[in-house]
Image (cartoon, rainbow, N blue to C red; front, side, top):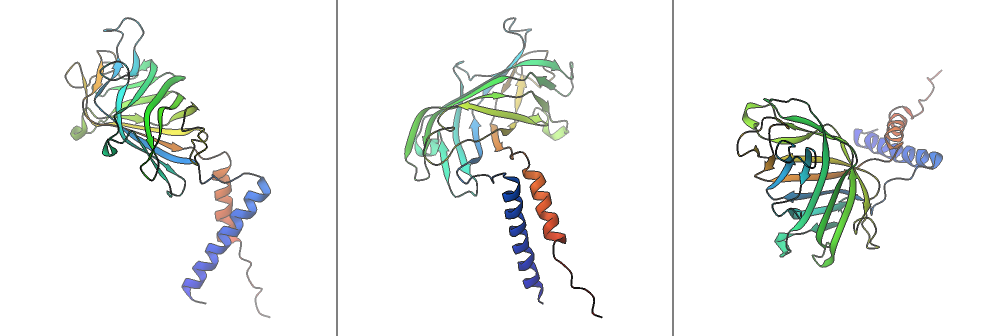
Amino acid sequence: MSANRTVMQRQQRFGVCVSILLALTGVSAVQADDILQMGVNISPTPVFEASSTHPTPPSQWNVKGMSGLGADMTNGTAVNVGGSKIWWLAPACLGAPPGLLNWQADLETDLNPGGPVAHARFMPDGTMSLSGKVYDESQVEIFDGVMLTATVSAFEMKESDLPTSENVLKLEGIGIVRPREGFLLQNGMGMNLVGDYYLDVTISLAQQGGGDLIDFTSGDVASISSMQMQLLQVPEPGTATLAAGALLCCMFGRRRKPPAR
């Protein structure tokens, strides 16, 4: 038997194993019209207000833009499972005006007061909203308004500790966005946010009081360059276990012929 034929048979067994496991457990696979991932680009904006400069409210993560109405959001995308469909979110490349991002969460603790590496944990039950124009895969405008409102889990923001990447802020560990309302949840047009989403954020250049980052106590922090935010769908419960079971089936499920007598 050739090596290629052996590989093909293993791939076929893998598919059969997955189908049987899904049928037996009653756990459905991710749907093709689920939004698997989405991302947006955020213009320079304040991101953190320290209680030392804003006595009310307490220190908080507060992405609200220069106007206070929301940070400008441009050239975002939402992609379905399999990548066969893409929607454009506030696409400047198609002539759309900037959308708006608002994201607030109270500070839980400054994990490194006084620096030199800024690092803080923020409280759960933060809030996030995105609004603006949405275009479909044919670049036709299909919506203008609130795309998404969501709650956000506890999360940490940490400055890079690499000498060549000072003042770069990234979300540390895992953050979860839980969609609640908005066009991207229920629209009847073939693409929807379903379930929870992992959150990833990178600010390529941040400043504190016009200078280097120190901590999340000494003063306000602003993004003065690009800020990218990504959402990635969290797998359904049991998906990882099923995948592992299918892999074992694929690897060891072939019955061996008894030795010749």
